[in-house]
Amino acid sequence: MNFPSGNLIEADRTIFLYSPLMSMLNFVLAQILPVIPKVMIKPFSKPYVAGETEDDAMKVVQHLNENGFSVTLDILGEHVESELESGAVTNAYAHLYERISADHLDCNLSIKLTHLGLCIGENIAMKNLEFLIKRAEASGNFLRIDMENSPYTDNTLVIYKQLLQDYPRVGVVLQAYLKRTTNDIELLNSSSFNARICKGIYKESPEIAYQDHQEIRDHFSDAVKDILSGEGYAAIATHDLELIDTLEHWILENKIEQSRYEFQVLYGVPMSGRLERLKEAGHRVRIYVPFGPDWYDYSIRRLKENPQIISYVMKNFFRK
Image (cartoon, rainbow, N blue to C red; front, top):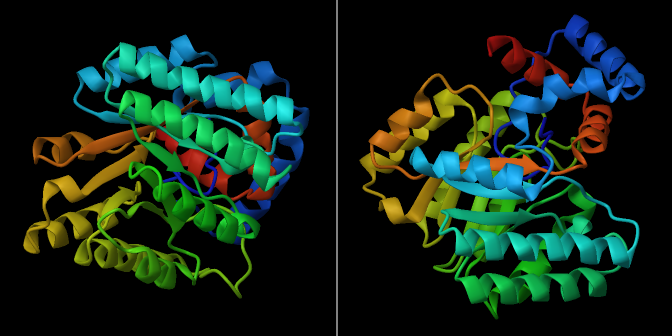
């Protein structure tokens, strides 16, 4: 299962149950999950991960494209421990650009800076990013820089702005629950600004992040409207049906061009037919598709960092 990296999908992935009993259950489950055998976790995560290999992912992309959906691919993992490992990840992403181009797929890539070595050194991440940007440019494709937790926010935005000077088809992710996001949009909004807006998944302190669910939803909506009231492009990443309805109504009411936004959701999350209705209405819908051999470690780490994800996962698991 893709327990998001704070971007997507990396998307609204925060439909949680807040009762004290559920919170305690979440905590207990998160503590025992690391000792549960992989074979027992695999079926639980399978609907949300497009396999472990590049070929697995390509099959899913092809299927989604055939059904009218755009795709973003994400290789699961982050916080590499060596420059050699970061180089291997970079090469894997570069090869994805080649496959996407060769197969004429409607698909771009989303990367995490710590997966490319930012946690080791900014120079390592920049070297890898510059290599990927050249591959993206050669294939005429797009690169999204995911947003991780708050210690990396400033560096991520600095790197994004630096890359944007050399290649216009670069985007970033902003998290609606961070109090700084309104100001970040004001500073960045231009015709070259492309941001995925998600609610945010990392546990952050009340000093820097809104904690109330409705307050986060309100700031999500405001962030999208701010971008579209300016000159930027908004990737509206949420599974919140009410929020989708509200923003679709606002977009239509304000006659926002369809070329200036898209709706994004995480692969495998039930949406009650809403994605098909958005697509039929002419809106672009993009599916955020994670894959890779790191699905287990990544999932366990995310669950331990934020046990409330379990409520969300369990709800969708039993709905399926």
